[in-house]
Structure formats: C-alpha cells, structure tokens
Amino acid sequence: MSAHPPETQKKHVAVIGAGMCGLKAIKEMLEAGMDVTAFEVSDDIGGIWRFTEEETLSTVYRSTRINTVRAANSFGDFPIPEGFPIAMGHEDMMRYFNLYADKFGLRKCIEFNTRVTHVEPVEARDEKSNWSWRVETEDAEGGGSRKTGTFDGVVVCSGHHSIPHSINFKGIDEFPGLVMHSHGYKDNRKFEGKRCVVVGIGNSGSDITTEISKVATRTVLVARRGAWIVPNPFFNEDADVTSRLDENIIGRLPQEVSASLVEAQLEPARQMLDKVGLGPTYRFNESHPTLTLNSLENNFYKQVEEGKIEGRRGIERFEGSTVHFTDGTSMEADAVVFCTGYKITFPFIPSDILEVNESNELKLYKHMVPVGARDVDNIAFIGVAQPVGAMAMIADVQARVAARYLSGALKMPSREAMKQDIAAKLDFNNKWYYKAPRHTVQVSIRPYLDELAEMIGATPHFLRLLFKAPWLLWLVYTTPTVGAHYRLLGYGADLDLARHDILKEYKNCYAHKRNRKTLLGVLVYQLKMLGIVLPMAIFYQLKSLLTTGKTFFFAW
Ligand SMILES: Cc1cc2nc3c(=O)[nH]c(=O)nc-3n(C[C@H](O)[C@H](O)[C@H](O)COP(=O)(O)OP(=O)(O)OC[C@H]3O[C@@H](n4cnc5c(N)ncnc54)[C@H](O)[C@@H]3O)c2cc1C
Ligand SMILES: NC(=O)c1ccc[n+]([C@@H]2O[C@H](COP(=O)([O-])OP(=O)(O)OC[C@H]3O[C@@H](n4cnc5c(N)ncnc54)[C@H](OP(=O)(O)O)[C@@H]3O)[C@@H](O)[C@H]2O)c1
Image (tube, rainbow, N blue to C red):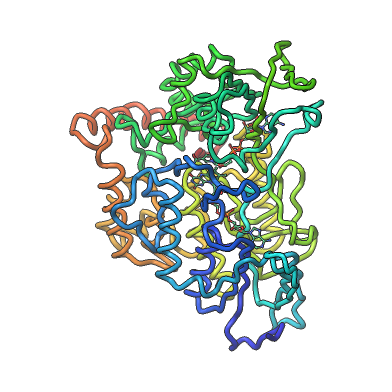
C-alpha cells in the first residue's frame, strides 16, 4: 500500500475497535466509498456490551440494561426491529449490533484478536498529497506477531469505559478481603453473606449496591457528594416525556431554576437518601445523572427503605479488615467494590497528538478531532463523549462527520478556532457540572448533536424542515429526540426510513405515557409547560437581555 496515494485512488482507513462506535465507523467509511480495515483486540464485535464471565475483560454486568429507552438507542440508518424490549438488555444490544454488522457486511473488514499498539502520522510530502498514518498491530492471541500498515486515515473507537479509575486508600494493600472494580463485576453471587463496602455513586455504584445489598449481610455505600438518584422513567407511566420544543423552553431557564423544577419532584426521594447519609450536596443538574430501577427487580430505594443500604461520606483508612470512615465510625468488611469510574486513555496515540491528563482532560475539537502539540490531519475519534442520553445517536452522527472529514469532503476550521471551541466547552463544563474527571467529556445530548450534525447539514432546523418536509415539523418538534431526527436532512438523509422509525418508536416507547396518552394528561402537561415554564423562560430571557445584552440557552 502506498503511503501517499494519488487523489484518484480509493482511500483506505483504519478503524481501531469494533464496539458500538467502531461498527458505526466502519459502516460510514464504506458508505463514503473508502476501504476499511478495522482492528479489534477481542474475538468478537460489541465492545463492553458483549457480556462474558471473564473478569479480565471489561464488560457490562449480567443485569445491565440501557438506561435510556430503546427509541434513543437506534442508529438512525437501521431502525431497531419490532420485538425488541423497550428496556434493552446487553443481549438485545448484541442482537442489534449483529443484525447491523450482517446487514452492512461489516465483519469482513474486521481483523479480530489484533491489538493496535501504536499509530504514527506520516507527514504529507507537499500541498497536493495527504497526511497518512502508520498503524502498528500485534496478534493478541498469544503469538505476539507484529505488523505495520499505512492508511490514509485513522478512526479511533477504542472506548473510554474499560480502564478502571481506582483509589489508593491508606492500608488498602493489606486488606485481606476481596477488592475489585466495577469493570470486572458480573453479578452479586460472590457477595452472598459478606460485609461489603461499595465506593462511588454513579450508575455502576447505584446498580451494584442495590444488587449486593440483596444478598450481603451488610452493605455500606461510600459517596463523598451523595447523589440525586432518579427512578428510571422506563417503568413509570407517569414520567413526563419531553420533546424538542419543551427542551427549547426549559433550556432558556437559568440552571438553578431548571434544577429546582426537578428537585421539587425528587424531594421525597432526597429525604429518604438524607436519612441514610446519602443525600446530594449539589444541585440536580450539576452531575451526570444516577438512575435506579435499571430493571423492575433492582430498586435502590426499596433496598434503602428495607434498611439494607447504609451511607458514609468517605473512607479514612483500612486497617487489616477494618474500614475506618471519615465520620469516625468503622466496620469489619469482607469485600470492597470500587465503582469509581474510568480513566480515559489511548496508549497507542503519541502524547504530542493527544494528551489526556490525570483529570481526564483532553483536547478534541467537537469531541472528535485532536488539537495537540503536533499539527496532524486525517484522524478522528468516535465515542469520547458522555451524554445525558444514548451513545448510539452520537455514534451515528460522529461517524458521518468523520466519514466526510476523512474522505476530504469536510474541512476542519483553523487550529486557533478549534482551540477556542475546545476551551469554551471545557469552561462550560467546569462551570455547569461540579469539577470531576467524570465530567470532562460530558455533553448535553441534543445541543451537542445539533452542533455536530450542522457540520453535515443534518440538524433538523425549523426553517429547513419547513421547506423540505413541512409535514415532519410537528413530528420532530413535539416528540423526544431520537437518532432518526438526524437522518431527515443533509448527508446520509433517508426521509422515508426516518419518518417511519420516528412514528414507530413514538408509538412503542412514548405514546402510552401520562402526558401523551389521555387528553387530560396532555392538557395538564401543556398547561404546566406553556402556562408556567414558558412565561418563566420569557421572563429570564428578558432579564438577561436587559442586564447583559444577551439571551442564553443552557441545556443539561
Ligand atoms: C456498565 C456500563 C453501562 C453502560 N450503559 C449505557 C447505556 O445504557 N446507554 C449508553 O448509551 N451508554 C452506556 N454506557 C456507555 C458505553 O461506553 C457506550 O454505550 C458504548 O459501549 C461505547 O462504545 P465504544 O465502541 O465507544 O466503546 P467500547 O464498547 O468500549 O468498545 C471499544 C472496542 O475497542 C476495542 N479496543 C480497545 N483498545 C483496542 C486496541 N488497542 N486495539 C484494538 N481494539 C481495541 C475493545 O476491545 C472494544 O471492543 C455504559 C457503560 C458502562 C461501563
Ligand atoms: N445502563 C446502565 O444501567 C449503566 C450502569 C452503569 C454505568 N452506566 C454508565 O457507565 C458510565 C460510567 O459510570 P460509573 O458509575 O461506572 O462511573 P462514574 O459515572 O464516573 O461514577 C464514578 C463515581 O465514583 C466516585 N469517585 C470517583 N473518584 C472518587 C474518589 N477519589 N473518591 C470518592 N469517590 C470517587 C464519583 O464521585 P464524584 O462524582 O464525587 O467524583 C462517582 O460517584 C456512565 O456513563 C454511566 O451512565 C450505565
């Protein structure tokens, strides 16, 4: 393969990883007319969604379900077939990925059991030729044989939820019991009859504490900031369904006001958490949300009510099998599970191309294109974002942006402009969310998707839809955001497929909810939204205009 192919030669792109994002990348690169070789270190597709009993492999746990509805988990170009549950489990996710890979013939592009060990840019010879990339791999099955290939572009899809972030508490090395991180947790069987300590109260911490507390003799959850724990709206017919229009209104309220609206509804739950020392110390929308009721059997609040979960704010030290907490209490423990999140790392990328510091801070333009010390081209990352919502929608839009970029059809702005955008986003996250490594790549899904899709003309803007497909305006603006909304316009659009998917999923996932199902439900909701929230939004927008000369839009 030549390092610098003539412009007429088909481009050849390397994709690293064949999880959710890798599959999307392969499909979109092929669709854009490029050749693809994907490298996957394991022996199958699916990434962390491929549940296995093997503890060394980072996978979801046995009971993991998607924590957003099915509708949001569909790649916009392949509706989830009828028959899949609304709350898809990992086996359903894998079924969908396999159908997707078969439909678009993706497996033939993947070299399994192959680990990428290093990528290196090869600078363009002159202005007429392109940058290319040398990709070094090794056989991961044990042979260790190494290979090098040269590609016109690289798409990194290696995930950011596999390398554990652990905490080195004083004395932990001498703790005689079981110490593990949630990335290796499969189910609660090995905690039966044990005295357990769980650290961290993200979604892993909440689910794993719930499960362990059903079989352990004692379960203490250590959470330095406590949490707002939201009952998953999947299982709640009364949960409000919000649309693009609603989000446009709510996003025009100041952060503390929109937080207060939700906090008022969660007040009884907060009181229950306060009683066991797990009440939140921050405003509702300052963090990535923690949900419970991941399935009907797993309900954090039920376990708290039954006295099966105790809370502490911190661990001071371990002394043998004794855990000393920061409030002066202590307990004898048999097991400690760290649900303390993940480190973002790309060990195969030179640090002058992308550096990730200890706080998980990194410089990716639109969470996709590195702007490091070395000025490079033709490399994109997919999946390095954490949405309040489903990753599948992001993977679908990012993969199309990457395909346009690597095929040469889309140019990135100047380095200076990209740096400014990165700095503005980091600054926004630092102000909006409390500062923590888990929030550096946090995105508010709809504004982020709109911004990204704009690069390929796929944002479902009001005026564009009005001219292109006015009959779809109502549908898009009054229903929740789903991937198919970004398949109505621009690059990769398929109007009929998208309309069909939006209608089908609306009926399946949302039409039965209280604020959609009955006329009374619709009226009460609209009265609340248009009679209370809209006037509030107008008030705060006017106030901001008069005091700062600017309006604002903040979406969580
Ligand atoms: C417990 C848990 C539950 C989650 N639940 C949800 C949810 O409900 N909804 C949601 O949207 N998101 C959820 N997520 C987030 C999740 O990260 C995404 O859904 C999604 O899996 C990201 O896909 P990915 O392809 O980026 O990464 P991964 O799924 O991690 O896939 C990366 C792939 O790259 C391969 N790879 C890595 N390094 C190399 C290398 N050097 N060479 C070759 N191959 C390599 C890996 O083997 C893997 O197959 C959850 C995460 C966790 C941990
Ligand atoms: N589908 C599902 O049901 C499901 C299940 C599990 C996970 N997920 C997803 O997987 C991703 C990862 O979730 P996660 O829960 O594993 O990780 P996470 O969201 O990063 O949460 C990590 C937790 O550990 C705490 N922590 C980190 N460092 C700490 C320290 N030094 N001392 C004390 N506490 C510390 C954090 O507290 P601070 O906030 O105070 O830093 C936080 O409570 C998220 O996107 C999540 O939504 C989904």
